[in-house]
Amino acid sequence: MNHGATGITQKLNNYEQVGRRIQRLVSDPNVQKVRTIKIARRANESPAAWERVIQELEETDGITVERLEEDSVRIGWQKYADL
Image (cartoon, rainbow, N blue to C red; front, side, top):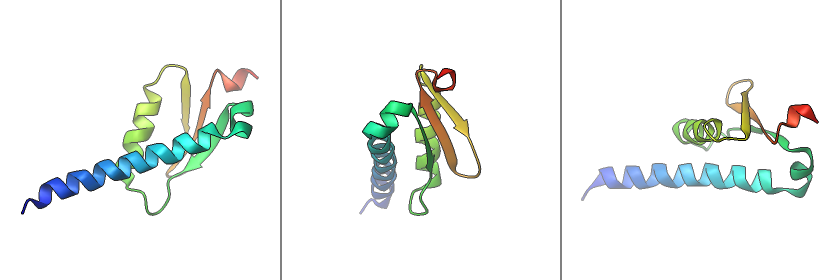
């Protein structure tokens, strides 16, 4: 039995779960109006998965990620600071 594959699958699932949660929050119509949201990592979310998603967002053109207190960020797009 290969337990290594299970660990990789679990990490991918956690990564996908973090990404989907952030996507749901960002898709909210009220958030779309203000173009910014503060999000914190949940206790049940892997720190590695959280960091991977946040790093990918930081590398995306048109998205601003401001790191706040431990395990939370403010995500903005379309120059929310200029509004």
